[in-house]
Length: 264
Image 1: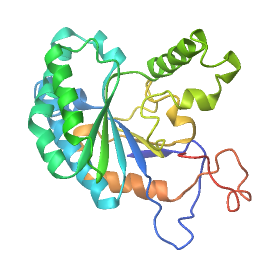
Image 2: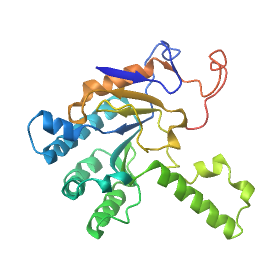
Image 3: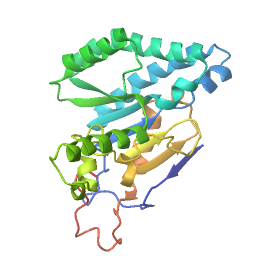
Image 4: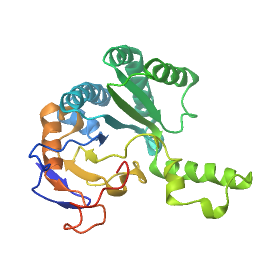
C-alpha cells in the first residue's frame, strides 16, 4: 500500500496544457534494505546490494521522465551508531559503487555530487569521492547527489558557522544573516530545491534529511521496501506529484497569478 502525503495540499490539477507536471528535483530516503533481506531470508548486506540495483532503475526512470536532479540519502550522520559490521558493510558498498558505477554514469552524461561531512571516511574513500566528482563535473544530462555522512541539522549548522566566520571577519553584519543568506550556504545551494521527497519502507518521517531544503517540498511515503522500488513505483510517485497544487503559502486563488519562490 502506498500513502501519499502532501506538505501543502493535494489537487487534481495538472499543468495548464493538460500534461503531467514533472519535478525538477526528487530526493529519496532509501529505507527498507534490512527488512527486505529478512523477508527474503538473505544476509543484511545482500539487502544493501539489492538497494544498489534499485538506484540504477531509478536513475533510468529520472532520465526517462526528465527529472534534472536526483538526491539519494545513502548514509546519514546517525548511521555511525549502527553495529560496526553493518557500518563497514555500508561503507564498503559505497566504495564498490564508486569503483564500478561512476564510469557508466559519466558515459551517460550524469554529474555526480556528494554532500555531507566526509571527514570520518577513510582517505581512500574520500579520494574516490573526489575523483568521481572531478570526472563528472562538466556533465549536463542530469545530476545525481549522494548524501553520505549527511544530516539536515549538520547542514544548517555548517551554514551558520560559515556566516559567523564572515561576521567575525567583518565581511557582513549580524543583521545580514537572513534566510536568504543561510539558503546560499547550505549544501547544493546552486541546485533547485527538491520538489518531491520520496520515502520508501513505510515510515512517515524525514529523519534529519535536508531539513532546510524541504520547506515546501511535497512528501510521498510508500510501504514498498527500497530494493523493490523500481521504475513503475517511481512513475506512481511522479503521477501523484503531478496531481498536487503547490501553493507556497498562498491561497488557491492566488497561485494562478503568482510565481512560486525561486528554485522552490
